[in-house]
Length: 604
Image (cartoon, rainbow, N blue to C red; front, side, top):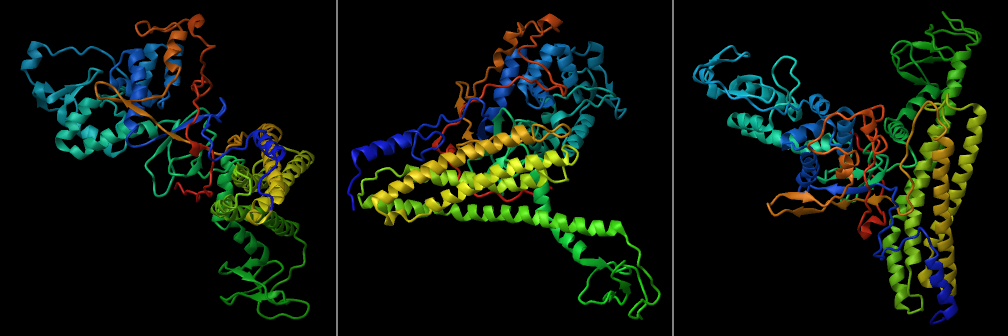
């Protein structure tokens, strides 16, 4: 056995390793892999939730010179999107911004001396109460505390505590949080705590950029994504999921495709297809009956005889040529076509499901290779064979995991992309056949290389000579690069040639990442000198109004020339098209993924 590699071999080995772009090392400290176009994601824990909410609150408070409750009302109305709020401010002006959100920023007028000394009639209960027993909201409406309290309690129990409006008829104003808290806590302290919890959790429930981790049992974390919602993220608990639909990571399937596929596999709809093909319903009890003989006069367990050819009820007696009380011989084309279509659909589903299941099972088995390979590496290093670095093997294993997962989910995608369920009117038969051949060619190339990579990774290299190990190393390196390029090529085909050419439907998928699903980093929290917490997030939204030449003291409605459409604009839904600055994720754990596909979460 050769004790060490030659200098040329060792130089070639490290040059090969340096030439690998997109193949990562598990022990590397460099984690600057996300590109500027990749949305960064952060984990919001129970401890950092308050800091994350206060971050957006203070940005609005500082820019608009508001109280905290008014800033929270504005943000809840705009679903905690600061960019959208500022865009509406520039587009419509301060007055429209406040009125649409139900914010009334007015100076309260005190009661007159005559009014303060006399009783006040509440317009709700029509009772005369003392001035100390009434409360006036920012909108100017005044009612007794008992009526306000009952109103608040009803709204909190109905789940409307985040935006409790004034009781006055056609009043759009949102009630003061402090008043709600004080009045409710006097009679129901538990409801007051629930009210505060709802306000705190509104940052997650009403925020399009934040979602709860769908882990079961729940880990208590939420994920905040800056950028496109069509992405796949990994929580610190280890669960990987699609941020848009909260299902398991399913790219290259779109969310709708994956929802239909899981439903098709879960509700045993194909069993119904088999029953349709191989049985016929009894005309009396409607139970499915399977024919077990050659005679076309069959009997159900309920005792009803019927004709197998047409399904009609008949008498019990029959001869070689006829059945008593029945005659059928006319050709029914619709019935034949329906039976043939059911068979064809069943065979097509079985084709894609069997291959999806096979690659999913392979992925589960291959995920157990990590410990085995680590043991083999330890044995090889103890032999002092001269090969000091086995990162090529771990890199190849991680590439195998990702490629196998992409390959398994490509079959549900193909099932719906080239079927009649979603895109029947989008393509002609010729176009569908051409695109299907193009996709299946790439799919077969990826499948062949993934199987080759799996074969070389599972080799007992700890029993081989150095020359054999070097040969396996080159094969693993080359196949890792090839499979990565084939995955990228398949995604480009899906995004540009298949989904990108659709006219009637829009299907978005999470982009392909050579490094795997991005692991969310925990939100950093720092403490100010006054004891309040705030997050360390950096954003260029605070300079948004400065770019539009709008200050905190000058927020009147701008003219058409001063609206700064180049900086931000509103789309048809009223959302800002301006994107936030994106950050890079940190942590070596963001590089690799060894998690199995999560179980499908039934959100109902």
